[in-house]
Length: 533
Image (cartoon, rainbow, N blue to C red; front, side, top):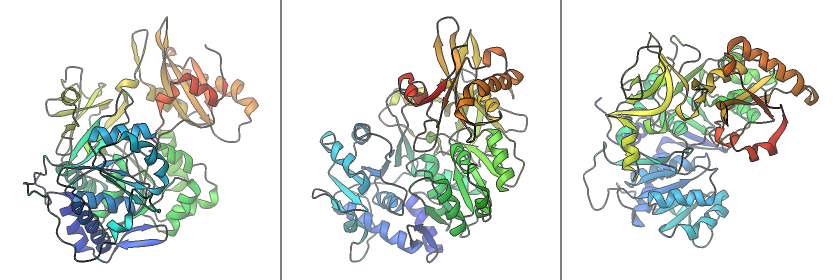
């Protein structure tokens, strides 16, 4: 693919020239047009250059969803530096690890995180300075106004010393994975990676330049949110409307008030929206469609949402390491429930066995991806980078299938597969069955070590409102077992059921199975529990 733009700043500047006066970001009662976003992010770049930031320097971005996030993000890029977004749910030690691992020279942070920043200061001696956003900074930090309101002409910021720019090699961002299997790994995404994925996703999503209005509730530090909720609108002349937290009723009101046309969410958000009263259903009228990503969307939830709100949900997928969008069900075309659709333009996908050999359609194997969107590698981890590839094909760690029409389905994460008496069990298959059972709102299935069977499947269930607590265990467990036995083999039926009021989720709204495996923490939130079968 021949890219029309070689870098993210170049791509954005071109869009800003074409849509100068159109609203780019609406947040908390204020609106910035494209000219303002371009101008302010230029000033941020100027201030960074004046403070010694050079091409390739890494800078942390620890900020809530707001207009400040993209302003800082693009300012960092325009200075030739590399953005290191910070997960807002991490504790100070975890944040410090990321900043130190990335070798960050500076940090932009929102004032709400001032206590965390104060706690991590002694742990990050290499930070040259911190910029406080949205609040009065402590004496040792720099106010955002010094960056965003710098007076005088805005020069074209060039890296110093002048070094040739190579979009295929030069980094735009380092995105750290959640570290569920060990220490977090920094996925190195180049300008070419992100520019190519923006082009592919704009085409796949059929975004109409200058016409769309995106509600941004997914946390922007997350790869899916950055692509689908920040890059897509700001590179297409559309408007992004960030919200700093997810509240279902407020989301419904904002969709109506801001005449939102596109909503991107994760499955847990659609589950929560289904709990809204019927009176707010008309609030969704302006939506063209919705997109779900980040985790598997239960078919039962998709169908209930589409029936109730009259809006189609298109499911897609993609790992952080792929910038991240790899596939989506065709917008306005043939969709297949339970699949993540077809590869987006310029991205290839296939299913392979443990040796990296292609397997026939319909056979479960690991999903691999190839294309200009695939990361450069993991930051300072050459061995892990090598292990993540079969040649130039990235190994996603997802187990899935491809059907005869080329649609991909994700069966489960490779690391989540349960082995019972030597037989492979895929939690998502069990979860899909349980999600269809009456009274179930959300469910997650994990493996638990077992002396005799190796592992056994264990289900964690959150029920819909309206079922009396006293009835939950006796009646519901019997119903769930019957429901499972009607569709699953006996070895697949969960041996234990735990009932929680809510399943634990991360900042992106994904269910955290690792938390469910921490039995001690789980017990404190259990409402009731069945005995071992």
